[in-house]
Image (cartoon, rainbow, N blue to C red; front, side):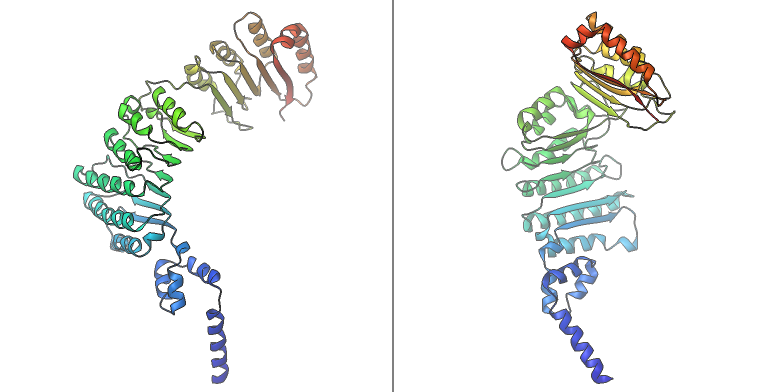
Length: 405
């Protein structure tokens, strides 16, 4: 039995010794920090595997905002990681969960000062940084602590600005001047930033009229390669949109805008196109009427295209839709799939003939609750014959009845 055991042991050792590096790195990839450290003590090869760059490229560091012995080592382990493997880091996410008091925010600030300082010296490949929901306007963030943290963060962003591609500071809740100071750090070396994605949702404190700040517009003018931008409605102004258009016209694909009922909305966005689709969703407690009567008319001076697709089986919206069309001065495209009366189409054509609207495209799918649409089809043929000259000369026209069963 002893000889047989020795043969098995030797065989097992040879299997692990001959394991390809890519397989060994995959095994290490599934281990936590403590298990990796223990495994690195097995032999020289495993110790070298421990320092493989692809094991440490992505990192989420979480700090608990509650005093607890079990969380006491979080701050120390974060510094240990950055000192040992920070040079490999490409994607970093830092979470600070609901800080309980000023003692913890101070400890977090001191830890972050050391962490960011070490990372700024050793790392030259960081591509993305995410620090969400800090809520720096809360009382647990005393002025001196907040100022020190912002100073450390700004200095770090200056260091990594030349290779940082993504920055997420959602929920930071800063004053306008502080927020602009942090963002301007990204353009420190070249007077412009080439970050492609920026998440500034709730980046500024609530209820601030950021759109009226010349400093904010000037700061945003430094970004020249944005692809995705997320921010609040109270940041939007004509000046900002013009700046983004001038500097990011060839790159900017998406702007996500968060609206809050208590944010200042003194400015108007020049919305030209709106598309609202609920597909087959239907809920008697959900109504499109406020959108048609209260929200969209706000943009009646700029709207040019309207596309709707919704299941309004529980409410008639013909009057609201017609009023919206007539109130939009520049509307030339209207497409809708919904439960409508056939006469709705006739009223639009009549308004067009009278010069009350200037549509060039009209596409309507009239939903019905019946399998047979013979009656609707007959009425639509009569309407076409009545307005044939108008339709053939002025319209891209497509209207059908469709059973919605």
